[in-house]
Every structure is written in C-alpha cells, then in structure tokens.
Length: 272
Image 1: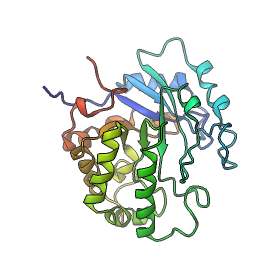
Image 2: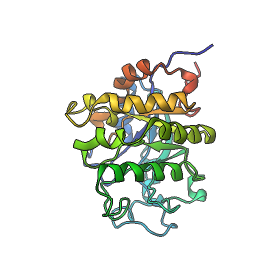
Image 3: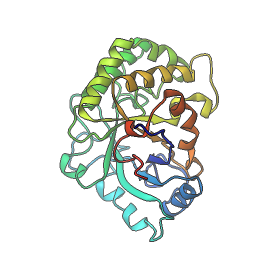
Image 4: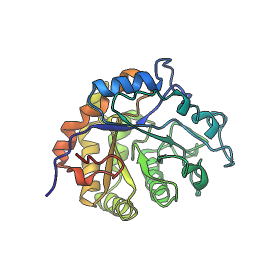
C-alpha cells in the first residue's frame, strides 16, 4: 500500500564552508536547531566541493576541496536535536565526463549531488558560445544525460534549472519536448539517480512568478519524471540559516504531483 509523502527532510543544505554562503550563522549547530523547530528529521549538508585529486577546478572551486568540507565533522554538535545528519556534497559537472570528485572521495560521503546546469559559470560550465534559449536547453539535456551515468552521482541538483537568463526560464524549459524529458528521466530511473525537487524551481516561493517564469513550467517537468518512475528528494539549496525549513513549503507541490513515500530515494524515505 502506498504512503502519502510528508516532507521531513532537506539534503541540499550549504553551510558557511561554501564560498557562496555569506551567512556567519550558517553553522551546523544553528542549522540543526532550526531544522528541528521546522519539523525536519533528516538534514544533508552539501557544501560545494572540487576534489583536489581531480584536475580542472576553477579558481573559485579550488579552495573547496575534501579537506575543506571535512571541517564540518568537527562542527557537528553532540546533540543534533533528534535530526538525522547526512554528510555529502554538491560537486560540479563541466562536461566531457569531468566531474569534481573521484569515486574514492565519493565513497567517504553519504551522498553526492551533481548539478548539470550551473550555466552562470560561463567559460567553466557553460561555453561562452551557448547563449540562446534553445542552445541552453540542448546543452542541459546533454549534460543531464552524461551526469546520470557518472559513477559518483546520487542525485541531480536542481534539475533543468538553468541558473542563467531567469527571464527566459519558461522559454528554455519549453524548448525541451515531453518525449525528451521522458527519455532522460527514464534513464535516470533505471540507474536509481534521485531527482531533486528544489524550492528554487518555483518562483512563487521566492520573489514571485514573472512573465518569463512560472511554477507550472517545472510542475510539467516533475510530472514527467514521476511518470518515468524516478525517485526524488527535496531540497532548499539554502546558503543561510534563514532558509532552513524551506522544503516544508514544497508540500503543496508534492501533494499536487501525487507523490508517495515509496517514490522518494531510500536516503530520505520515511521508515516510521
């Protein structure tokens, strides 16, 4: 019998160890306190990482190596307020099979989130020549197909969220036909790669819908992922203390999708 899903996890949480976090309060103790207050039972810390043993890091990524993010272990409080803690990372995929973590390093972590659409990183993730919405859509599809085949990938971070040209988000996603999504998500399902339901995909949870970006755009995508048999996890992708608990605001979207507990990745699936 299927079990309705109650969101009680967030496995895409950045601490002060991520260079893009500017919040000195984004430390594990305070974040776990906030998680407990907001009813979260599992939190996964996923700071940005590029393994020093893997060539090709950008200047921004290079300092954020395994030694750097391992500092989080010493930051964990003895009392986690009843919250189960997972230690993972968000690495980077830049194409041509190059991902910022080795299988050996990945084995030291509970999970690895791999983004395929950090297209604001021009010249590193996105070639400068890729500018038009249809070009961005095509490259996202290619990168997704490659990222799900990587040995290290537990889940895809913010899938198909292009992280560039926000005013053209609808246009970019609408350039990907249902058949292409179904094929890509079917392959992800076969590999057991988790698809992230991210708060960042829904503008109504942020600054609001605009003429170029609507919640319905990503609901279409997630429906196709569910129909393809994918497993999921929820994420705030917060880089600050204030964002803890934001995954709870995804509940109406998950309910509308009709997802059950059995459709979530084993790492976050409720057991009682």
